Length: 162
Image 1 (cartoon, rainbow, N blue to C red):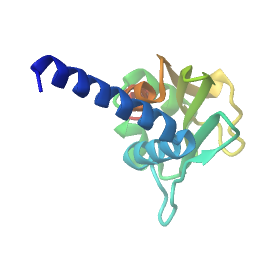
Image 2 (image 1 turned 45 degrees about the vertical axis):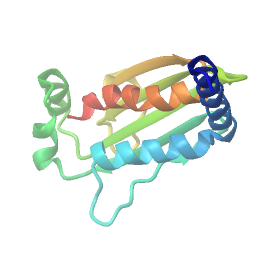
Image 3 (image 1 turned 30 degrees about the horizontal axis):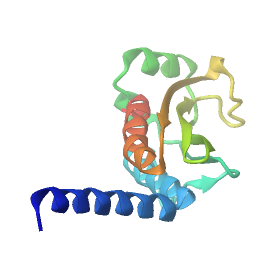
């Protein structure tokens, strides 16, 4: 077999494998699993609480947790501006949230990631006066690109929590 023919077969095989992965990609499972990994790494969990991501509808996913131990919590936020805004309100609890929204047409799409900290306990109204947030967005041409880019967008959004 010539080198040229072998190179063509390798390229053809790679393309076939890529197409197979695109067809077998399970968006819901991937997003929920990825959100859970980031939630366990970045969101606080009260004793015995299991923080779990949920599918909110066909294209939105989220996870949230409430922190009531204010002793170390505010001090652990490295962004002094964020910590000062929270400290000024003397909250009894903080609501942490991490959400992903995906708009997809055929294989292409756009994903938005939102992280936030809300200090307006107990109702936690989602108004800018009582929260800080960080938004990230990404475009993708196929599900494999989403699989590679979404964790980077989540990592960037989670910088709010550290």
